[in-house]
Length: 459
Image (cartoon, rainbow, N blue to C red; front, side, top):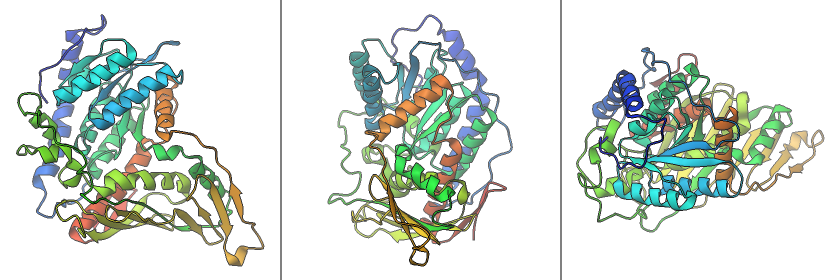
């Protein structure tokens, strides 16, 4: 990323020396992680598929000590990535503070796009009445010792590197979904978090907060539906003009003037400037897994919450579909995934951007079924077991904005050291499905994952 900053006032405790110490101390780790990510991007054949590998054995350095939140003080947080999602997060966190839901202050922002950075700075300073420091090199933001937590809302190909760097800097992390672009990166990030149990990482999958999935988990644990043998879910929508084409192109954006394009490409390697790629990167397979990582993560993650430890890790994934209508989009517009788990369960997942009628959300057991199509949890016995169990509806409360609930939960992790619901283990299980389904879509094969060795292979 660029070394040029747009800077505001520096806190007294934040010195240039501390920045240099952090940047120097993590240089080896940065080189290691960037090299691994770049190799994945640069070595992939025309199909876009690389052979899955185990996480590297080389250990990360110990993360820096975190800065605890003093009792009664505001959580000092920063945001990396100030596009639409990142700036929306800024506005929402400020609203939570004003509503008395949590005490927080956004103190720093980072983005390679100086126009987005200026807009987000304006939003934060007007909303909070304070001055906010801005950076075009996010690593310099991470060197600020007073920051307690960092929200990362960058494109998918940067998630792993930024998450790793933030943990190494001693920051708690809110990492937008999908947790990473590649499975290898997810497993490396998982190991780093495991090696530093004093730090917290929450993935931005807010639908996990819906009470119905937690009630379903209780029903399954109680044995009410017997053995949960298979489930189904989907995320389907429609578009006349092509999914993600609604992101507008900024004619004022100029690489080398107000955008560090090389910094944006980062771990994925250099690429020719393309304003469509920059604005609509979810359409392109080098930068995103499209429907699978952007949409299906939302619905499959809460299903994992409901199924819990009953099913274990995904162990075999096969996907099909194609480019049925939006042939200009490089990623697929129709995706159908079959996931087998280590403890006798199969999940069917459908995704589409050319038809909005999806599957019913349902978990099936040998003795009964759980319907999760509304806010509530409906349990219906199988015909053969109708005399043993009555049909019942478990009413679930309206929690309002589930993303705000997710934000507050993360702040409690930062302040009170609570453990996140959407943790790195859950994010890694999701990435097994995302990455291996993506590989299957491109090459037509089936992929397996071994939870004992944390390795994947093509069948």
